[in-house]
Image (cartoon, rainbow, N blue to C red; front, side, top):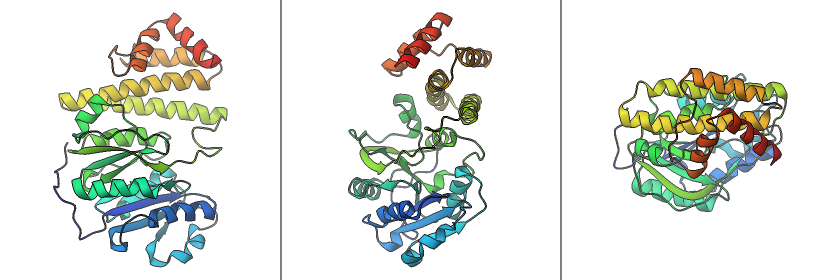
Length: 320
């Protein structure tokens, strides 16, 4: 499942393709995003900026005229974030791909450091953090080793990846939490992962986003889609070599914990949680395996292993 490692970065193509999905965003947000990309220490021939207009009511191209040929805009019927990103990957010509949501920005100083490490080390994946979350860098390792040792941050905007890793891997269309399905599969293909620890991405939390939208129908869909991703990844573990299976099982266990916590926080009674636990039990995912992945995970696995513990956790997380 590992991709062939390339010791040097090819230069007959752009170094990085920046894929910027947009749907009904204010023009000033999109321009701020693009400006942050163009401010990076990259020559024009080293970058490709692809703006994917996912069927916006006002065509995004109307706010891009000032950029000339530095930005390519592709307009398509509305299909959602996954469809827009998939189009971007299909149109990309860079050695690496970077996703940047149209209402977010890259932080030029920290991202410039990522570019320097990308050019010097040429990893298959280069990871960084969101603004305010910087930490120490880690030694280079393959993706399987990384997932066995560390918590995975699934956001597709939090890393650069070598385009040749993709093969036929694409985002699942029509679901929420598509990053949770995509990122672990991509990482298992990587022979070299460099976690820089740099805080290089400005994520702007908007009202009405996936994580802030409280409409009951949206909450139900969000929980159902996350559960479907857990089940899909769990099935995938059954067809992988041992070490990759162990790496992905860690991610499945942690994502299952997140799903249980989301169910506690986002639903108004204990009934949805108890129903979820029964479905997880039927699929061999409950009780959570009592591994010391992190102190928080281990404690949660112990407390959640009984009905009394589950109800205690629900009281705890709904009160605070």
